[in-house]
Each structure stands twice: as C-alpha cells, then as structure tokens.
Image (cartoon, rainbow, N blue to C red; front, side):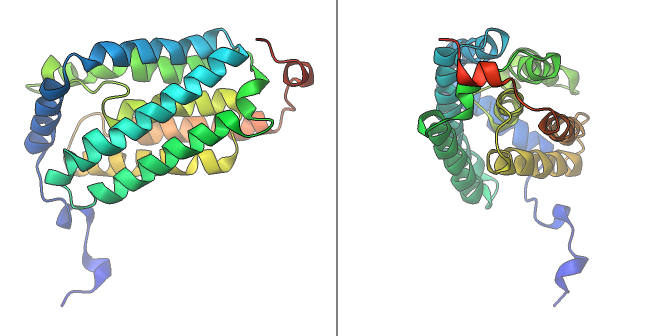
Length: 230
C-alpha cells in the first residue's frame, strides 16, 4: 500500500474538465431562468458597496447567505456530488458560511452597520464576480454561454463576490476562513483539470486577504460606525 504522501490531487479527481463543464451546462439548463434572479441579487450586492447604507448592507448580507445556501444544496449536493465524492463536505462548509452571514446581520454591533466607504478593490472584486465571471466560459477552448459560471448559481463567482463584501465590512477572520479555503481548493482542482484561468481564484483570495490585513492597520471611521446611515 502506497504511503499517503505519494498521492497527488490528480489521484483523487475522478472526472475530466469535459465532465466538469458538462455538469455546469446541464445545471444551468435545469434551473433556467433563475439566472435573472441571480442578476438582481448581484445588483443588490454591488449597490451595497457603491452606496453603503444600513438597510442595503443587511440586504446584501442576506442575499449572500441565500446564495451560499443555494449553492450548498442545488450545486454541491444535487449536482457536484455526482462526480466528486467530497461534494457533501463542500456543501456542509457552504451551509456553515450561509449561517455565519446570517449571524453577521443580526448579531449586536454587526459589522454591516459600519457603512464603509466604497473602495475600488471591494467594488472590483464583487463586480468581477457578478459581471465578468460568466465571460470566462468563452475564454476556454470550445466554451459556450451555456457553461457560464454565474454568481449565486455556482460556487466560484459567489465566493469572489463575498470576498469583496467581507473586505468592505472589515469582517473578522472567522468569516474569511471558508471563502479563502474554497479559493484554494477550487484553484487547485482547476489546475489539475488544466483550466487556463485556474490561477484566478487563489490570486483574488490572496489580494483580498492582503488588503484586509492592510486595512486592519487603519482604524475604522468612528463617525460612520457610531452613526450608520440608513
């Protein structure tokens, strides 16, 4: 029996890039036209960053929580589990993140009440996930719109949009653990599948984490926290 350290990720992947994107294509077809609802949800998230108001912050947090919960069930459990035995564990992690985001909204003194000023990076991360991420399907060889990865529908753009909001909120480290971990797991999976944009998720996660560390050295706007705009 081989020692565990002799194994690589490719030894555990039982599917090809063709199977992976065929799954996304069939998933998109099965839930269409839910993508329009996902687009509205994305606009709410971007609006909460561009115009930080207390009610928008709460709405965005609930939208993100719903997106993580939907992906946990509809994607990981119902679809991804067909080709990846680790999918139920991913579903549990995404469900846990959904609960964390709900707690972020309702706990006393939640960070969503801070009404942070919009920053180019926070808007850029969420905007990339919501508006540009579906275009990656066309950047692949033989990729089509039917394989587009849409915020609130599949994991990767949902996670990237969440990183933008977490950065805007200066959320505590516990809220970052699952999103950043997913970026590493998904990035490694795409690398093994030889997807040309496999580097994107880890780079975006690293960028968001570094920005969060830098922002933590700057005290928040006490006036905006004490008097959040409604």
